[in-house]
Length: 109
Image (cartoon, helix red, strand yellow):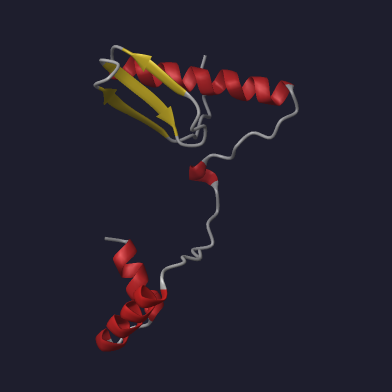
């Protein structure tokens, strides 16, 4: 049975190759579950994640934290080629905003 306090990030999508729905979990990218209906797929991947977590706990392995409960600083570093950096800096200057504000606006589209 899947955990009642399960806060992991799931996605159910159709797999044309398998002719079934596939269930995925972002925090456990190596796991998937196939089933004929979206609900059966979600139930299956949640049960699989629950079983894997139980196995990890019994073996003393660290369990991934759900993305939904992680705290994010709002900062990350992105490397771009120098000519892209220059173009973005020019665009920000012409718009009268900081490079950070310009990049944030472009990323949030």
